[in-house]
Image 1 (cartoon, rainbow, N blue to C red):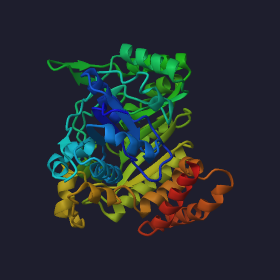
Image 2 (tube, one colour):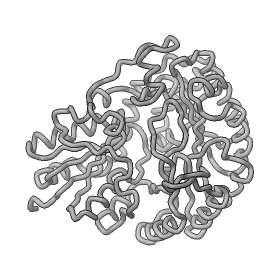
Image 3 (cartoon, one colour):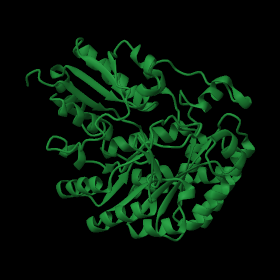
Length: 434
């Protein structure tokens, strides 16, 4: 191979324990943009491709660009860039994605980083499918964007992109093409707010009939005979919306609930709705056939243990009300550039002051999302993932931890759990399955 690769796009492993392997859109869209500029692009996905492939590509690349989310993926991205610099000191090392956007100066200060990509729309107006990317679409779990951005201002979130819905005509063309060339029976729409109702075209605000848009999307899904999942806000999940979603082959939905305490939702998170909106959404979706992931946060600045117990009480009500409910409680993650990050750093409300890392390796080594409560809740209410990781007789390996988690949930003992043991066990299990 001659030295003809202008840019080698790399997707580092985003997690050590999740069985979910979605289409790496964060390198596919930039790849489409670079190719439209006449550059030769190569791709590497650490979840699927052997490291030998990366070592073969690096000597022939002028630039290596990694996509990185703040957290575990940062560490893997740093390792890859350092390896590339050792192999080829003159290679341009670049970082894009969420971490580069929220901490541009810090990332650019890394000795192995020469360039950062801080925009939010690299190639999003293009269709990143061609003969070269076909293999990346074929493996893993199909993912697609029907809209981008988020118009809300939750105090823990660093997403600042305005919401923009893709035209239904474009969605239909691209999904038809992908289904014809790739073939899939399930798709994940990576949209923070698939059912939002307003956007700006740069001159005026345009209102969207979200029910009609979901009907049109559902019509495409029925014709392709494809089921799907996405994200939605609790107030949007009206009885009419649930009916449209179910008819349109939606089988999974994620709702960002965050807390079961009204004062936390109003004052700390500023979610824009309260607990009653969550309860209404649960009642509306129950019995529809849609399996819903109810996502919560815990241990935020200003949140008390009593507030967390209210969240747990709400979760018990949710799983009693909705038989298909799944639940996650993520440990609060202080993302730079957010109001709650400032609260965490200052130690507001008795919060142990957060000392942020200042390197990608440091962020990669932090256990941002996981906590005893994360695993206790997950092993209680996300058995779908556990059974994917531990099929058949392998279930005996994880069963004692599931039983322990169930006992601790009932007793509200949420501060201690053998987290390291569970994470090590799952990591070994995933290695065995590769």
